[in-house]
Image: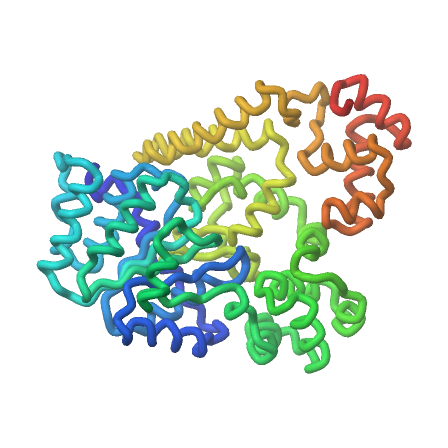
Length: 450
């Protein structure tokens, strides 16, 4: 495997935004860690707290060379992981990693890593490697490689990890030796001033100081929560009334705000978002293959301009990704059958365009979904209905069958009662029923509930 067969967008720094809310207080903490010669920078927080944006802003201001690698599930293969690391470093300094990227390169993962460390020592340049989305790494052999790199890296090298959960690395020992700088959820939350800049400058909402304070308090500074609120406000207007009625904290507002944002979007846009949500990275030709459209580039540009959770991955606007939380919520509306078919289409496109590893990844996800259905899990793909119930509709149906009220279902699933009613109406339509009793009876006859 040479560098030409690796997915180049994984090495691209996310595009910088002109209307970015500066996080100078956090960037200063990260720079202080470099000045003190620490080995590792760890930015760890749940989704939606701006980890990648902070790292992009910070490394863009540094005088040293930066290698960026956005990780995905395929990087649980230790050798593939090392080749991607080598390729990222090679783009920062072409003297590094050449041995690993030669077509005939061989050796154990540790031997390959030692060769890479020796390159770093020989070059001696000040380099910083960012491993973003590290939480996708589950293979302990990869964690061991990263631990070995941390223990043996030269003083001129610094490792940065962005993750949704702490990795199994020797963090306690590194803390005791003052070798790690850590930024966590509490620090990443927007302050009142940052929230005001985001809502009124980035999103151009013109909110009063009182409304900004109320929203910051109710979302606890959760950046994605504030973005969802902003999108809902754009569509609704009547900002003061919306803010006054808005309640809940960052654990319970997602479904409500998703409904407010998506239900008001045109059907064509909702369909595009749902169908492309299975992708880790999007391009117009790939989206065309999944959706059957021929205008995906215009659709992607529209989504970016609308600030609808789309992140460009290169300066040419050819590759994008969705915010992870946004994609996860979109996938909830897909049936198992839809997801299998979309993964198969993605696999065919990647295979035809010279990315066999990504093709295998999507085929594996399709097989996993089919295997789960075959093992007895109720998936919409196995439903004897013309229009299958979505996973969320099945959840609602099962709670109805257990006798829960709409309000109780809303609390259990962390959604609004209005969203529960919408799901129930969809269930009635798909089951050709006009009441809970008839819907439950028909669902039991079809084996959808016990």
